[in-house]
Length: 235
Image 1 (cartoon, helix red, strand yellow):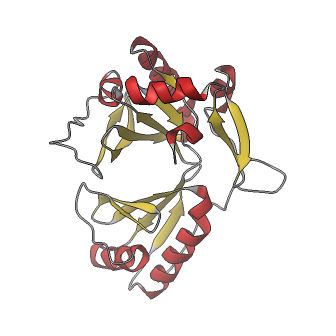
Image 2 (image 1 turned 180 degrees about the vertical axis):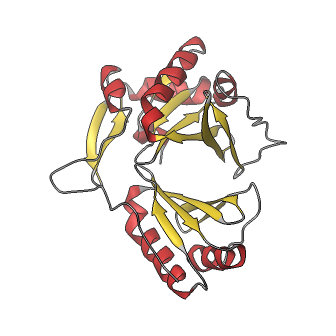
């Protein structure tokens, strides 16, 4: 068994980790706070307007600060690792399990993506490390926190917003809450996770975060939507 975190934590007392979308968020009027070692967009100055977008139109929020771990192992070993780290949850192709403050997202029979809030990062990493220590064979844990950028689309128009730049079918009958789909997102490889009835998490490569923001912001503007902070999003 081998366990390797290929990238260290980015959080520090003096140097804040920054999203690739931060510059665009600031230009849009973002209010940013340092939380858990990250510069996080908490709002845009008009909380009532943000709530209106979420309730009646569509909004998007930068969540690139999410913890993102990729677990790789043989199928049986990986299933046992996830069950041990997530409190007994199994793996189902195309369906993520919500447990222990994280999403456990099977990508292939030998790869799982774990997503969680940065404040839960130490606990999630510890649970994964303990489970990996007991897993047979070779286990690789790669920290992709700064490898994948993330945006949440939320509100009644979330599906319509996604459809403006992505052909993945997110109708509830096809993609219920918890479903994960890899595919082309704004003409680049990515993932879409259905976090809730009116909430979609979109992930692409970190270097494409700036590009994803511009695509989403343009499409949202045509739908009467706009950016919101994580405080309004309620995460």
